Length: 134
Image 1 (spheres, rainbow, N blue to C red):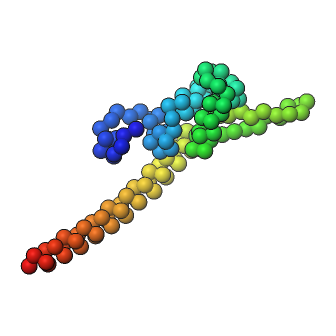
Image 2: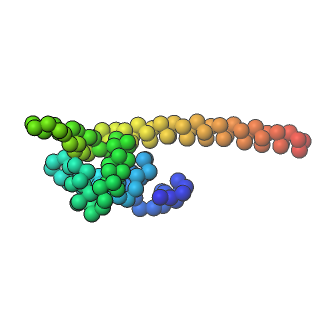
Image 3: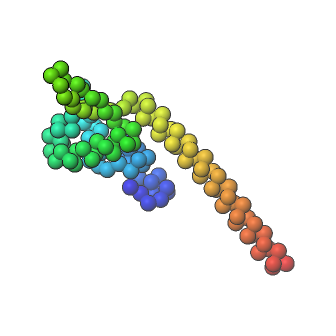
């Protein structure tokens, strides 16, 4: 991930890079998200761990990060004989895109406000320096 906005704009970024950009997800999280998108049925953590060739706890942490970011949803499957399991599926891409757009709009508004504050602060200091020189 780039350290500055100018570096970020110079980099080649894929749409999957938005997951990292907006929510700080890891490479593994992108892999898990891609797996969930490619499958037709929701997967358990055990299924995910097997497919990505990682420990169950590692897969679980990745799924938790994706859920926290809103990219994955959890469903409970109840067994007829009793008991249940959780399965995971990707959130609708339109929902994810709408949320990223909302975050981007909020960020843009905040940056606009900070740029205005910067302009006011340093414009006043410039005027003070000119007044002192005269």
